[in-house]
Structures are given as structure tokens and as C-alpha cells.
Length: 121
Length: 110
Image 1 (tube, rainbow over the protein chains, first blue to last red):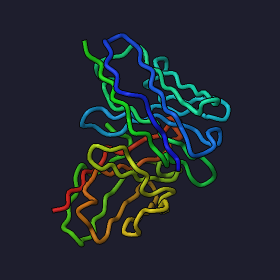
Image 2 (image 1 turned 180 degrees about the vertical axis):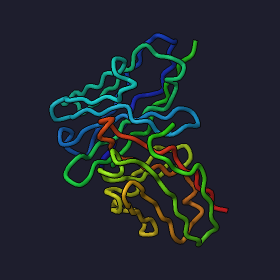
Image 3 (image 1 turned 30 degrees about the horizontal axis):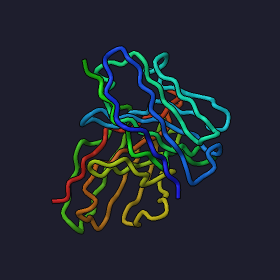
Image 4 (image 1 turned 120 degrees about the vertical axis):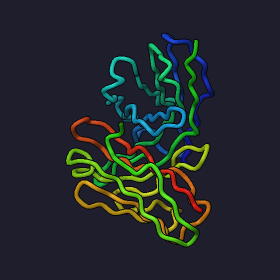
């Protein structure tokens, strides 16, 4: 069965960086992309960006350009999301999701359990 | 401010039919497929409807989706207490070249 297992909660100071991992299993990792979505406390979902696990191509949300980097390690079927220059409004639960993008569909069909990142001095 | 517009709340009694709307523009819903996600309290979102009106395996046929022009809607018939959750619409936006979500609708089963 498809599973995405994320790394544990993090507490960071303003200005620091955080790197969240997402280990995939149960499918051919390089056949899909991974999108990252975050959710601030009590708020809605925000798409952060996408990476192709096939060739490493990326596409980041405009508001995060320059602060976010998404990578993959195909040898371990793991995706990573690094966010730099953290601010208090980056406090959120960060989700990875398998991104299906083909023909008539473009969706996130499996999700990780989420990683809480708290930014506080 | 979310790119897609949903009502913040909806409610119904068990057995009722409720609908949740999602309004967008020509660059997102108007030119791409719409997906719906269900988020139960304290859990990760789950794909509920994809490609406007398709249900993934395991999703009851009480859930249905539709799209017309730059709007979409999610209908839930035979409402059950376990349907109490947040529901999000989503689509790709060609102008932003990225994914966009609605602000979410909190469904309460009275």
C-alpha cells in the first residue's frame, strides 16, 4: 500500500532553516511527483511547490521563491523540503503528498501524516 | 485570501443532502480539473473527488462532484455524523503556474 512517512516535529528560531523528509513506499517513486502543502494553525491549505521524482524538476509557489528548496533521493525514495530564513508565520503543519499529473487528472492522491514546524524565539 | 472561494461553513442533519460551492476564475477552474479533499479533525487531508467528478476507490457514492464554467460543487447525500470535517476544493492555476486551494468549508452535522 502507498505510504508517505514524514520526519518528526521541529522547533526552530527565527532566521533558521528546517528540512523535512518524506519517505515513500508501496509504489515506483520515480513515476510520480511530490507536492508540499502547509497548513498554519486553524487555517487552510497552502500549496508550496512540486518536484518531479523522475528528473528533479521543480516548481515553487511564487511567495516562497528563494526560501524553499525541494529535492529527492531516488536511492531511498525520499523527498525533502528545506525552508530557510524562517519567520513566525512559517509555523505550520507541513505535508508531503504524491502528485499525480497525467492527461485528465492533476491531484494529490496520497498524503503524509504531517510535520509540525514551530518557529519561536 | 484564497484564490478559490468557498463558504466558511455548512451544516445539515443526518440523512440530508448538502452542497458546498467553490468559485474560481478562467485561469484555474475554468481551464483545469477540480479536486476535493476531506480533512477530518486532527488528520491529514484525503482525496475525495478528482477530475471534477471521479471518486477514488473506497470513497462512498454519497459523495459527488460537478463543475460548470468557473465554479464547482461538492454534494454529500445521506449525510452521516462521520462526514463532519473540513472540505477543500483545489485546482491548478495557469497564471500562477501552481496549485491553489479554497479556504475550506467546515461541515457540521447537527
